[in-house]
Structure formats: C-alpha cells, structure tokens
Amino acid sequence: MKKIRYSVIPLLMLATVAFAQNFIYDVDCTNYFDDMLYDRVRRIIRLPTVNGLIPLKCDFHNHTVFSDGDVWPAARVTEAWQDGLDAIAITDHTYMSGANPRGGLTGGPNRSFEIAKPEGERLDLIVIQGTEISRIHPDGGHLNALFITDAEKTAGLPGEEAVKEAVRQGGLVIWNHPPYPGKTYTSILYDVNKRLIEAGHIHAIEVFNYGEWYPRVLGWCRDFNLAPVAATDVHYLTSNFYRLSDKTFRPMTIVLAREKTQEAIRDALLQRQTIAFFKGMLAGNADLLQAFFFASVSVKKISEFKRGKRDPNNFIAMDPYDTPNEEEQDMNLYLVTNPYDVPYVLVLENGRKMTVHANSEITFDMPAAVKEMKADIINLHTYENETLKVSIPLPQ
Image (cartoon, rainbow, N blue to C red):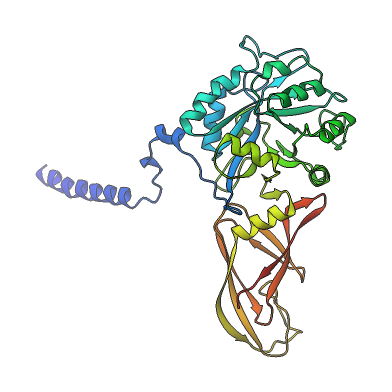
C-alpha cells in the first residue's frame, strides 16, 4: 500500500504542473473577462478630421416603445453609445390622429426624449429632440423634425403645416426614405415635397435608410442643395438587424462640425457638411468626399529599384500599374496608409482595382516617371451613377 501511496504523489504533481502550464499558455483567454463589464464597452470608430472639422457619428432616425419601436428610450441611448456614436435623435411618430401612444404608455410625444436625455448626459452622448411627422402621400410622406421644442404641436396637423410648425420651433427637417409610403420603391419628387424644399423647409434627405440605398435621391442632394443622410430607422435592437462585428458599422451620418455640441451639429447640417456612411460606402458632395479621402490616406515612397526587361508574351501583372516592358525601367515602391475605419476601392486608369482596406497599409510599384496616380474611387458616391475621381500625387 505504501508503494501505491508514494507513486500517486508524482502523478498528482505532474497533473498539477500540466494544468498550470495549460492555464498559463492558453491562448483563449475569454474566461478572464468579467461579463458584468460588457455593457460598459464602447467601440471606437476612427475617422479623420477634415479641414479642421470634427467627424461626429450621428443617427438621426430612431424609434422607441413610445411609438412603434421595441426599445426603451434610455436603452436606445446606451445602445448608440456602445456602437460608437456621438449623437442620436429620438424621432417617435406623430400622426394626423395624434401622438400614437403604444399600448398603455402615456405622457405624449415628448415623453421618449425626456426619458432619453438624462442617459445621454450621463454618457456624454448628444440626444436631439425630434419627431417623425408621418403622413401618407400626397401629404408629404415621412419627415423627421430635429431640434424642436414640442413634438406635440406637430400632431394632428396636415403634413405641410406640421413641417412649418417644426420650422417655427427652430427645427431642421429631413425627408425620410423618399420612396415610402408609395406603392413602389421608385423615388418620386412629390409636389408637396418640392414646395417644402423650395420654401427652405426641407434641409436634408435620407440617401440610405435601414437597409435601402437610393442613388437617385443622392442626385437630389446636388440638384436641390440638400444634406445627405444615412440612418438606421431602427425599431428593434440594432444588433438584431445589422449583426455588428469588428468590421461592420450601423448606418450613420458623418457630420463635420466645429465642435461636439448640438448647436454645431445643427449648423453643419444647414451648411450641408454631412457624409452618409453605410455598408462600407460614403455618399455626399464631391469636394467634401475628396477632402475626406485625402485626410484619410497618405502615400510614401519607401524604395527605388530597377525592373529588368520583360517578355510581353509571358507576363503576369503584380501591381496596379504593372505592364509588360521590354526595356529596363526605374521604379518606385510606394506605401499607402489608411489608419481609419473607411475602406477605399480604387479603379485605376488601366482598369485594375486596388483596395485600400480600413486600418491597413498596401504597397504598389510605379514607374519613376509617373508623377500622379489617377483613380475612380467606386465606393465614394457623388451623384446618381457617379463616383469620386481623384488624382493622387506620388512623392518623388
């Protein structure tokens, strides 16, 4: 029995050492984290400062349980903070029939904002008071009025009059999902909306809503001098629809503002300093998109070399400007750096594609005689069926 007892001790010691080694060197360390802290985690969305203006991440279209949403107003704010936003608007519906309370909830159409605001103040997230003026066509469709003081005064009014009331309160109006609530998803400029635009009562328009992209509407931004907006129009949990991961973001409007304040956001919207960001794409004014792109990426020459003669009959392109050449060439090797969260897909003059991924660097060869690289950035949209074209200087 003693022999058995003594032989067990080394085995126990060996098992203990093995367990300790497995624990120390276990690459999967998820068991170290405290689940109680997950609700305090906020993602960081990296965007460039453009012309001295701060890129604020905003969602101007959100619903709560006080209209037809499934989320409590304070939870909607917490969720937006976790998603990395700087500002949201609470835009529960008001209708011709009144405030549209949900079930037994009462308190009028301002109640959801009143509940959401303290949570925004706690988290340093701007909560904008708003309402969705919801009418059928031809009475204006759905329009979000932001920066208002009393949503209840828009309830029960015809669409055009409700918009005018919002403007009287200092409101700024966004035309939501323009194809809806028509019978088809063709974007139509209704007479009432045209009147409101011409009167200066519609200031912005959604070019992306929920999961829908409206290229024709982006054309209206230029034609009628409207600020482009992308919004979730979220009614449920954003994670239920967008399935957010490290590489995806909820739709948002990038507002280039002088500071992080509600007043600065309003001024930037009035000045059309907005870019719609959705599904890895940007949409907006060409000059603004160009400034955003050049604020995002940098190009650096990292070496020089000579490329030998090539057989045009046995040629495989390795770089965007790679071409068969029977003569020796002086070449430069360049490094493109993009430390931000927007990718760029470039189609070059020779038709080849080069993707500058978010938070990454990429190298490419270029003949030393080439001083600039011309490209069409096909995920940056400037107009209906138009994308941003740039000429990128190459350091010598």
